[in-house]
Image (tube, rainbow, N blue to C red):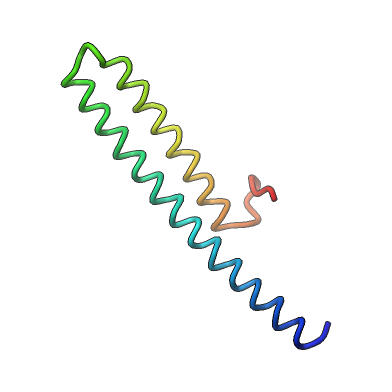
Length: 86
């Protein structure tokens, strides 16, 4: 491999690492937001008992999405993670 090609591959590899790190940070931020949404919906369920079932179901969905985002963050942080799939 020529020096120029090696430099380009190295630069692209560095860029990929930075982008994966950014994606992991974004996924974690989304997960934290979903957790906050779930907490808010649970409080709303106490305030609006006639909608409690609906609001609790939405809170559960938000928590499940937070888990999905944390799993994605783990994959982005560790490309050799067992769930990593290109």
